[in-house]
Image 1 (cartoon, rainbow, N blue to C red):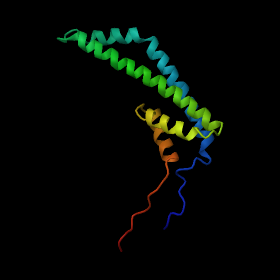
Image 2 (image 1 turned 90 degrees about the horizontal axis):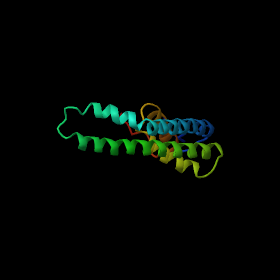
Image 3 (image 1 turned 120 degrees about the horizontal axis):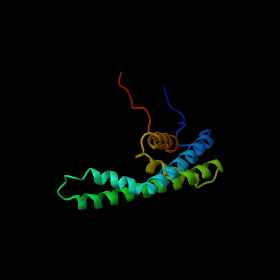
Image 4 (image 1 turned 45 degrees about the vertical axis):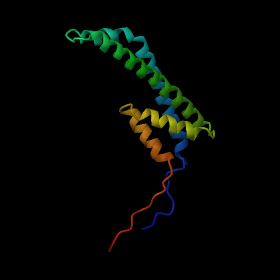
Length: 137
């Protein structure tokens, strides 16, 4: 059986559906970023309660704040890029494919929705250049 043409690499009928999914995911990540920002104090108190018996609690608290800030910025970045990618796909703009690839790579770390949407997007958009391996009889 020979594979003449692969559906991967072209958006075809997936453009609108993928665009709507990225818009929904972008809004979700923006809301998540807002919640993370609003509840920074609560997260600090909760993490600080765990540091009661740690010898160097101030260093760990500083590291927590840096990591927490990175997560908040990543959430806003994924949300904005995902929203822009979705709008570009729905509007059928040329920049949509590139934005969607960036959004897919950034969102893969977000379980379960970002991973699912990111991997589906990468499989759908990236071209399939391989073929089936030759089998020996």
